[in-house]
Length: 471
Image (cartoon, rainbow, N blue to C red; front, side, top):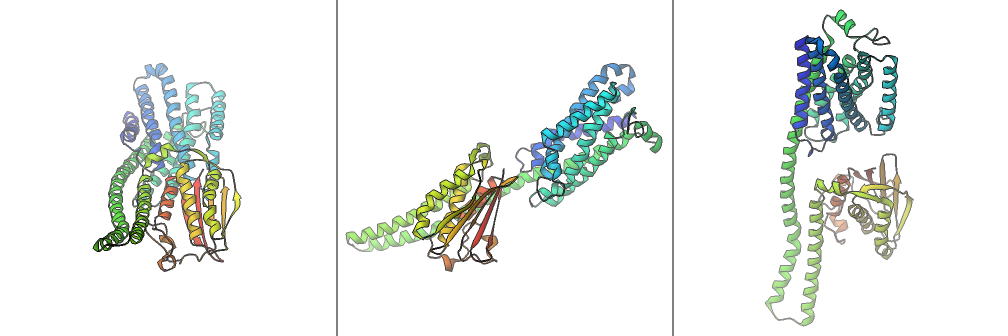
């Protein structure tokens, strides 16, 4: 029994130490940012089990250690319960999920009122410390472990596709099953109580039925959870390496983009200047050459500005500077700036829906999103047409959509329109000034706000672009 209790505690202690001392703050995974809660639970729970071990070996210290053990047990399970709450809400936040009701149930005001009521009720039935331990295990041990197991099992499905996602899903599913088993072993098989189910299913019944202490199977669950957590933490380390490789890739791509896009206007300027210097010209001719060069300089400025903004918004630290703004106000400001351009083409900007939406964001960047999308729609829409705008507040996200009456885009080219320097139809748009950076910029700003953007051709004619940003 001593070896089982020691191993059980050691497994959790190793898990907690690994979790708390591995740097996961730079990870993009929600799980990694909250895993310190699991680490704190594991270390506290290790001391709980070693407390059991000490009392088993030295029964004389039981009156002193019992209250400490109860306090540490409650504290450890509260950390586990809070971790399970975050994972459950993250795993089932999608409205399409069959278990989406858990997202609402596990909101802090709801679940803590339910759990605390349950804990107090059970503790009022019997006031002994052993019954208090049973009440804690029933309330926070069982439900925390059980729903954490369910959350972890499905958590991988909520993640975006990355190159190590399949491995990561396995390391979530296995401990998910282990935590469900642990919930039954640590949250149901408690010390005997005077009420159900502890009066039937308890540690004594388990030992008589299976011939092995329940702590042995708890230790196995803890060992499985520890091994899978080590593997998951290794992937978080791989993720850091991947981000470094991606940063180098961005630098190379930026250099390539700059040389590609700056070459054309610089070549044009150089050619015009060389021709101008070959012979004397009239003042008007020199003015024409300078005007032409000024146009090329304007192009260079626009390209550099967009490229620098693309690089700027790749910084994760920007998210820390977000403040609250009203999305409808940002949209109206963008529309107001583009009304003159739209009226010049006899294009109507029609607002179908305009909900009041407060959002934590960067208002300048989101105004860039609205401006670029509306300006794009104006560019590619024929005269005497309409552009329809929608801004709706859904339960968990803000939805913006813009529909024009232009020629649309070839279906085969639709997936590429958000890539840098991509222009869907050069023959159709060669008379329209642009650098293929606007939609790429829009996509990166939307993704910076944890949102998503999609485009599809309308059934009649024209293009529809939809932006979703979580509230």
